[in-house]
Length: 416
Length: 105
Image (tube, rainbow over all chains, first blue to last red; front, top):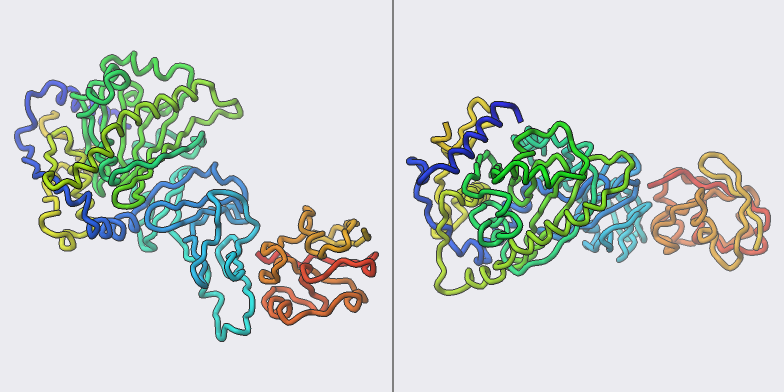
């Protein structure tokens, strides 16, 4: 971050911590309609217009180091696999044989020298081209060049691999926009993969998403983990275009944060703000991360069905240059899992409430405005005209959306 | 067990102790220089393609109709092309020479 941005963020945190009420021009936010979390038609729209039309983080380059290494992802709306070609390039394909749709890879990971559908033996190379099939005499005029595996857009930021089902999507780096400007100081091409794990949860994916967009819950859910270190009342928020946002939570005492870094390898280029506070990002729709000079997690949340979510934690370390991963990492990984366990305490119960006959709308306060921003973007993606009126979120926060330029960075008004 | 002389894709020669009773592909696929054979012997992928040495073709069963259809789809087919999954290794092939066909995936 440049000095000016860091100063603005510090001034923003000071302002948030000391204010007696929301800024005078902050609008009353209408309730978020509960049917958005429970209506099957809304869920269908979300799958088509959001999940099949977004850049989604799936894996780190280190997870498939050799030609033929593959990873299968059966989340989101369709099964998709990544595979590294003999040319070293990682590609993404729908796991769908062009004949009758059988799966091409059948395990979560492994290595293949070529790809064959187990149903009738159609054979593809690692680049997805159909190269041979049985009983060709019975396919008259079959143009094999038109039956390559369906490609999925697959692009990298540093060593992070993202996919997008929309072939016409804008380039990944354009989409990530201001996040890249901040996160570049993590040197994403040098971060190494540590591990990933996940768990399923009985709630709509937005219930989980919402929880990672605000700090209002810290005192209740994290009294012994986060609250002793971070002062949620000073949380400073920057809303960006395309639904992305940044949230910086001041530490109660800078030394509390620097203690957490002891014993870990550090990235020199990371800014002072990230070393003395919690600098958190949401990459719309489902990626949460932060800038941390000792390494960072990516959290990703995926819809399994309307009331089931798959949550995944991915960990990355600064390049250890051949040294083994410090033992401290075990504690770090289990500590985050404990905090996540606190975060999800009420989620299945919330889902039940959302499905009840009485609960109609969710009132959000000023410090929960990132949630509202997220939902506004969801409506922009789906198209308001496609959403029943009583399930729409009325645009209220567009005036707060910051542009790329720090000189025009419109932080919360009153922040100085 | 018989001896076979195999020329790999880099032109290197190897002497292979081949099990009779298995197919030629099954003998080749575990070698670092061998064939991909990704369908595992189902005669559907064409990735166990080899060139059989002169004078040895008549010591093995001829090309079947299914093998012929797959061979029509492989690149670099020659008159002495065979899918090694369709060639049983027998004592009669003692000393046979063959060449692994170019990488086709």
